[in-house]
Image 1 (cartoon, rainbow, N blue to C red):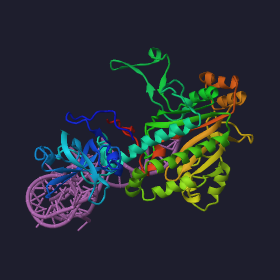
Image 2: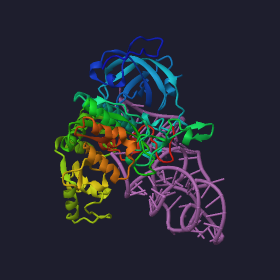
Image 3: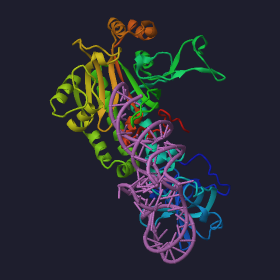
Length: 471
RNA sequence: UCCGGUGUGGCCAAACGGAAAGGCGGCGGCCUGUUAAGCCGAAGAUUGGAGGUUCAACUCCUCCCGCCGGAGCCA
């Protein structure tokens, strides 16, 4: 909670600059300060002053500023302040005689930086719909909800790094442009160069061969795990899938840890520990923002997060899950049968109705999983796992990787994949192979789970979805 | 890509085919250590676009566009 190193933009003052969050704390009472931010509302009192609510994004709560009519620019500037206007306020933090806030600032000076025309500024002093705010994505972080969501997003990113760094994981930057089509994990975006309006491809390829935006850093991540032992990636991922749902975006962020000398058991334990860690951190570090989400987005949010923090996650094998779904008496649109993938409705039943808590499903039939997953001794299943959470569905997908050279090569052939394209990947099995495992966590899905926000477009600053790449 | 829904003043939202409610915001006034303040008042809409049916279309039909939800796929 240090002092900002940036001097306040105010030629008349060298006073200590505080964030609004700092100024709201009782410890700040008595300090002469400078505050800078955007006005949320102004209320005029006939008692000779106006109330300003100032917010700078440092917290959900605003600081109440008392602007007396005796200020030299009261009529010229203060009276024109409306929602969205930017100001520098100098003054003294004091105990607030009113209800609703511990502190307030009695202004000794207010500098107006920019007005926001009430006829055109779209944010009003009222609730707005998600859809409308999405259409003004450049201004929506100024709203209470999106301020809260993006503070939580920042904190969760930090918590993820901390979680791994504290456990000795090395952060690896895997390529965003890649030539490997990663076993067809969804449609990919091609990367091409332009010669004027003409796309250069084929023999003219910049990289000498077709390239794509990454759909996963996993294969590259494995190479680093087989050298630095425990690694993780955290970066953008791209899918050109033409899907219109609340859970899909064309550009999203993914966390992919990879652990050497680890089996599926250890992989599941790490995934569960991480989810718990993040939820716990959110409850501790983002209490005010979560409380807001709990009141305006999802009434059961905090209770659910506390539940996730405090209770053990369930685990079932795919085989058990199928039996459980077949015997539950519930009718599903899609069939439940050994060998078929679990549908969204099945996953939701398991986590929302049956277990009523996060659940990990493991050991899936090999036929529905990619070539790199480790074949189990039963010959039928692979060491794969999905961590399901209520309301979202799959939030983590992972597996133990096939470390046996001959089995991996057989898998490649079985799935009709070009062996030569995976030479470097196969090399890991040729030279000092080790059992290893990892998983992918969708960052936005985690944020949806933590904030209760129901649409992925509302937890990413500028969402990219089919047909939309505004801002 | 498929299925379903939806598009009404700045925002939200009513209107069985028969004169386009209401709320919020903004504006003006009153009141007020207020706090999404309270009270009063006035203003603001050729109902997404193009056709069509009808004496009459927000309402029914066709096409287009946007948005939302779901499915598939996945994170």
